[in-house]
Length: 347
Ligand code: XUL
Ligand code: MN
Image (cartoon, rainbow, N blue to C red; front, side):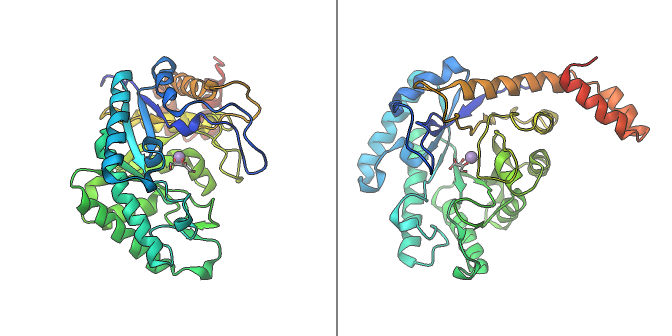
């Protein structure tokens, strides 16, 4: 038997938030962004996920030299804490220039902004020591179907990916699919779309996916099957484990909080395929409840990590022989009861 994987965990500084939502203001004191790095190791996390302006705040108004200086400072801060920058993602949904999307905007000037920002993001990834850039294609999509030509949009996305691969010969691109929110219909809604773009690109080995549990559920899909598809193509760059209570807004609940069995199956597919053995992180993208008091709030991160580790135990102690017997007998009723009993600790 091969040695079981020892998992490394990551989260992004945005996961320690002040609790503001579209219906109400912040409810917790702001915790200084850079003080967050000291929280990682004690919580059992080794990796930091970044947006480009998490590394370099206000980057749109800075010169290339200023950007590089700031990113180098952050690299040193991470080094001091023994942390790895997992990825950097261009935040292409905040600026005035991205109201209609970035790479697929109907405005040529806005598309140019998106490309300039993407180059800066890759520069920041290099300066901070990250090997990957994540594309969550937030506003690439439409609010009304007739406002954009989807065929042209997909051409523009592929063109951008190819330009990124040319701009940097080493960086990996991990596409994080999501079917909606903030747009009504997003382009690249599933991992299948992301992987098709990867294969169509000029260096398909460097284009992969990042699967978020909640995003797969919002697309009406089983997250563990989405992960299996990416793993079968050796294209699971990372994961954003969390949970989602049905087809609602993107909830980013704690891992396993809405559907423990689905969480078990995600851990199972990762374990069975040796995910993590090449240094891949167990990334979390979880939001603290707005009712939670204090600053900084970290229980949601610690709890999601603990649930993941308990589920690793559940996967490792799952009786595969018995499972096989039920499969061979095609007694799926017995198999289901066996799985549920195993999760509930019923002997
Ligand atoms: C949005 C989302 C993002 C990405 C990174 O739903 O998940 O936080 O993970 O840009
Ligand atoms: Mn995410």
